[in-house]
Amino acid sequence: TGADKAVSVIGLGAMGSGIARTLLEAGCQVSVWNRSRGKVDALVSEGAVACKSPADAVDANSSVIVCLTDYAAWKAIIEANELSDCFDGTCIIQLTTGTIDAVQEHAVFIEEHGGRIADGAVMCYPRDLGTDAGSLLMAGSPGVLEACDPLLRILAPTWTNLGEDIRIIHLPGEPFVD
Image 1 (cartoon, helix red, strand yellow):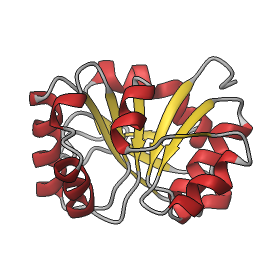
Image 2 (cartoon, rainbow, N blue to C red):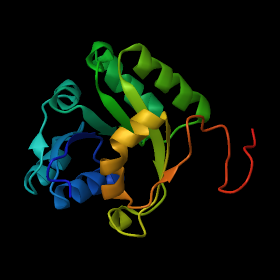
Image 3 (cartoon, rainbow, N blue to C red):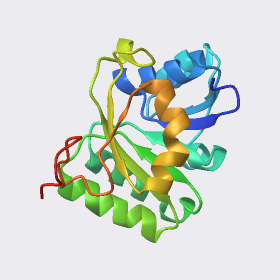
């Protein structure tokens, strides 16, 4: 269960709200932030904790799920809220849409600022999160993915580990192809 898990969710569009609700339903303590307060208030009414700023969301928990439209939006939030020095010891579970170049640039940025990163993609509808139809593709170092595993399994019980380098495609039972 998620009863002993605490996580922040930044970005409460359809997918981010679905992620937060799934975690709440699993018993997690969920802190939320979004640019529009109405989306925060809706989740607070379901048991989430409101954060006044993205910095509060990052400070609230050592695991932070970011689910925004793209990396430009996340970069703008980081810059506008001076978050660069807030990532020390934080694990960012990045579920924002972006190119491989943006993903890699972001990973370097987070790691250079003391954070850890698991980057991925949600491959299902929000209603499928937390069910056997839930699907996540995740990449990151083995230690980070292992640490994130309990939260990821709440969202997608059989999430897929893509390994450390998302540029490498590997199918079970086949050799690595670059």
